[in-house]
Length: 420
Image 1 (spheres, rainbow, N blue to C red):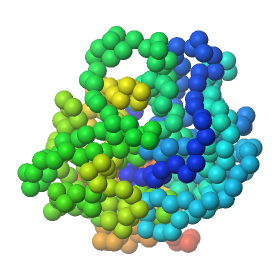
Image 2 (cartoon, rainbow, N blue to C red):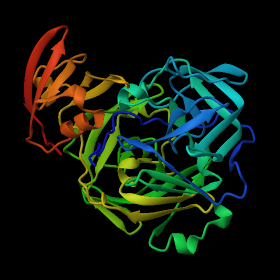
Image 3 (tube, rainbow, N blue to C red):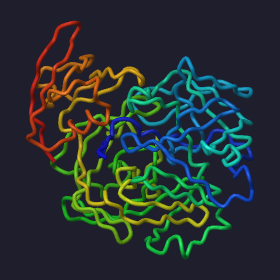
């Protein structure tokens, strides 16, 4: 099954610290449960799981180990949740804009249930939740499916969690009953550093100038890219000579701009990646983060999806076993245009950003153009992953579009570039 190989536009969301936190935790609903396996949706490398808040209907939340708590980013007309007493606060994060308003609510119930047996499930009591007053990320438009927010790293604290990207299955294990010797026999154990409930990993990189260094990266399942590394974190970080300007993501404070490039290799324990993509955000977009020898950047799901993964935060360990995607190429958007789905229920696609000087820009495309056909295929028969697979194709490939610009039908063609 084909899907987006490396979609880096959407969610490089990082919540810098926890504002307030009660004594909260997740537990199996039935304390005798040894494991709970659930299917998840995988969209553009992001894991989306159904979650209920205060007995609501299921909300769709991205599993995001890069933030601490649950964040509700957007609700549509059919979504409804009841919140405990909330107060308005200002929150900030990545991006080049200003902090935004959110509501902070304590003492909430979060539930993740088995779809066929509600007696089987996970409950989080006395949980902190943040609700954005504006849909800053527009995740449903960006992912093309209904998404209401993110569930954070506090979900990882009391379980051993296995993730199988191929079969789209996540398994929560009772750590006291988990047989590490048997279950991790074919895996490689990688040490983690757990700081304030988040996991950090050491990655060895060989840069373009043949200098080697070890970078400490936050493991961020809410980022669909492979790596991002901030040059302001360390003078030894070298931006490659060949780069592609890109919109890297969307943070709490606005757009995250920067460049994509490649290092010669990256090593995670015994595993070596040749010429992986690395995103280098502009300094102005990450100035609000504490970036230094304790954190140089993040490792995202375009790396993790290449493995069967077992997280053990209590044991400060990550277990990895390569899957069939391990050697797939590290691709990027070679068109220079980013596409969104205007409504998750209706297959209407619009261009929402274009990089100046890119093939899409030179072909005359503009933000707001509606895509009707791509390579002779009607857009209403495609999903967003299908469209992105085309835009992330091999360099030199021809892309044919028919777009609607304020009622005018335009035919456009361009070649995908391969600059890096």
